[in-house]
Length: 443
Image 1 (cartoon, rainbow, N blue to C red):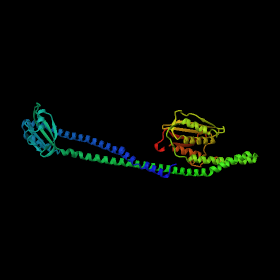
Image 2: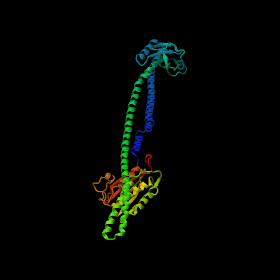
Image 3: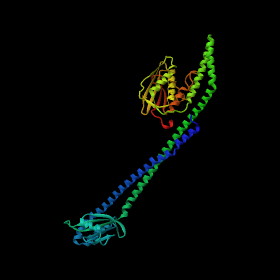
Image 4: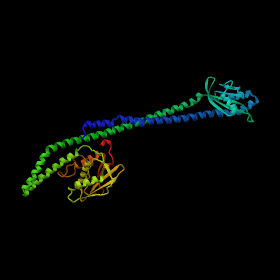
């Protein structure tokens, strides 16, 4: 059995494992935060591009609205009309400067922030050469502006000049800043919520692990106590019981009268019962499982059936059916065989005429099902109490209360499950689940 100090160390490593915490942070939390941050950044970039396009479209719509009357005024040389149009555009509030230039790049009329001469401007040159609209971020009168150059044509589609509309670059940033702020605040809130949920789940898992491991510690402490008791009982009673048994057998040969035979047989029976009790205590307190190799489940069941065969007087038939030949489990052969023997013994003692053993295939292991046709469990029986040491429903003198406790203990050590219930048609059904492989901490 494990000592308390070694089990406490295992609990500390399992529950507060720093490497597990680092892995949790490194492979789950940080990637999750990084992915959400990247997603927010990509979405903001897309939104920024959309916003820039919208603001450019605003300038373009304004330019289209005034291009025709400005072109007609420029052809007619009506400077007053052109100035009126530009002043009207400037009053909209979205425009910081509007200007009209001739084909030489010289200023004709302007309103707001403007440039007097664009004869050396590459943007202006491109408009005049291609006759296509141009736009770019640039510096105008010491201010960062977004300038849009719109070509102007007469009714014969001849290029007669171009119009420049200026809007401050910060207007684009200002319009997007609030959206960006809201997005990152939302990301922060979502991140906080996610971290809170993860932290809650993590610490809840740790708490559950701690409760489970503490329960295992108490169980092992109980097993250790019973083991110490069993070893003490075996040491103190083993030799006297052997002497009593031997002398009772010799006396049985010497005294052949009926009364002596009856009394000596009773003594031998009680000595054998005490010997069996000591052996069961020793079996119950054996060391943890040592499972390093896969074992064939059909062979284990056959071995357990043969081991219990000498206890069967022939009135009850033990029938093994539906056992997949390929069924294998990772198990301590001796301990698992001990559990099966106790399970078969309990069923044989309860059955009226037949015990059936079968195996059902599950996703991660196998269910060994043992059914008897006996009276079943009493209606007021608490199944959880039946697997406690020394708990029994049999009359005094007919059971030690360790059989099912040994089964439950061995199955639990193999990280399996043990279920006990009445059958709908009568009798009792015991089911033990055995996983195909055991976790490393079971070894």
